[in-house]
Amino acid sequence: GRFTVGDVRLDDVEFYPPLRPRICVSIGIVSYAGQLRVCLQTDPRFIQEADAAALLEAYVAQIAASTGISSFEGRATSG
Image 1 (cartoon, one colour):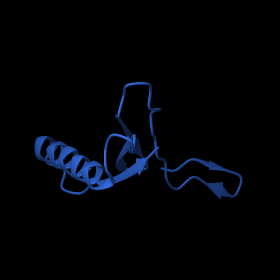
Image 2: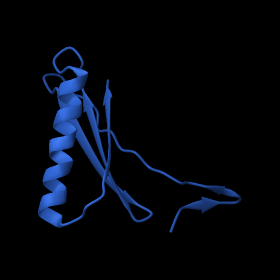
Image 3: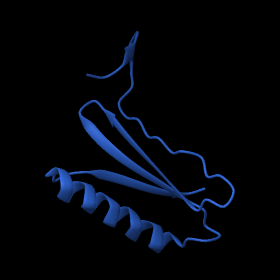
Image 4: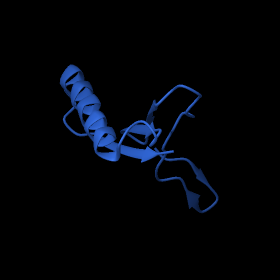
């Protein structure tokens, strides 16, 4: 189900842990309304956008391979 207050429904949730000093990548995983979302945040001073996308793709592929789940949605952002 989805969280609803009055006539407002929460359709989606994303979770990005903060980037701390000397930490270049953070990964947040959240399950909501029957979906598993993998969110990746990177420090653009150290990790280029294409590398972040490749890391996210590899991470999601590993989760899919180890769980047998075939469909994930991943999202990357530079913070």
